[in-house]
Structure formats: structure tokens, C-alpha cells
Image (cartoon, rainbow, N blue to C red):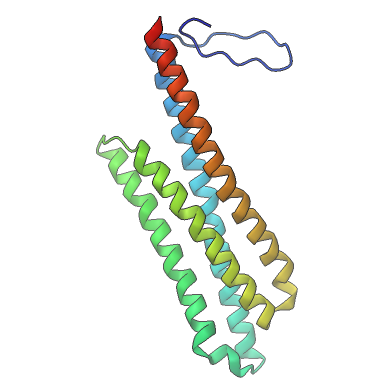
Length: 176
């Protein structure tokens, strides 16, 4: 409506909170918080998959499975650990940039994309190790794979929507 961003839900009356440049700033802030929240969920999922893989490997060793000592299982756990550590460092890198007053919109989108792909890979490795050594963990590992996929797809769809909405909002403001 003019130079304001308005959302209505099921015919409820809308209240204009901000207008003009302030509306665009508020929108950008909301987008950043959403990206940060999704990155947090994804990093938590990566950490959970690492713990499942570690538990599965330890359980396999306790039960005397010789495969648990094989390099394949150890490499899968190591890969998940590397993914977990790199995701943490990416998030810290963005946080440091924010503290120094740098613009992080593009970097935040990139971190969001990268960590979602990491989560999917980690969940797949955790499922494989759970299937080998801890069948009771298989349902949880399968759920984590679904969750990682949903976060990945949701994140990319939201990035597209956010970019279109921001472009439309900016274009609408420049016409006024």
C-alpha cells in the first residue's frame, strides 16, 4: 500500500508499523533473524548427527564388531566432525563481521546454503553408522535426514522468496 509493506491474515485488519525506508530496514532485519534462526537449527542438527554417529561407533566397538574399527566407519565419523567444526566456524565468522559493523546479508545466505548441505551429508553418514551398529537409533537418524532435507529445501525456497520480496519492496518504494 503505497510505500508501506502490509500483510493481512484471513481478513484481519492490518496495522502499519513502519513506512518508507524504515520499512525496508525492518524487513532486512527480519530476514537476517530468520536466516540466523535457520542456521542455528541446521548447526544443531549437524551436532546431533555427529553424536549419533559417535554413539553408533562406540556401540559397535563395545559389541566387538570388527567393522567399527575399520577406517570406513572412522572416516564417516571424522567427516561429520569436520562438517560440524566448519559449520561452527562459518557462523562465528558471520558473528565477527556483525560485531565489526560489516554487511553480512550475502555471507549469511551463503552460510545458510552451505550448512544445509553439510547437514544432509552428516545425516546420511549417521544413518549409515546407525544401521551398522545401533538399530535402535535408525528411526532417529532417518528423521534427521528428513529434517535436514526440509531445512535445505525450505532455506533455498525462502532465499528465493526473500530476494523477490525485497526487490519488489525496493522497486515499489522507488516508484513512490
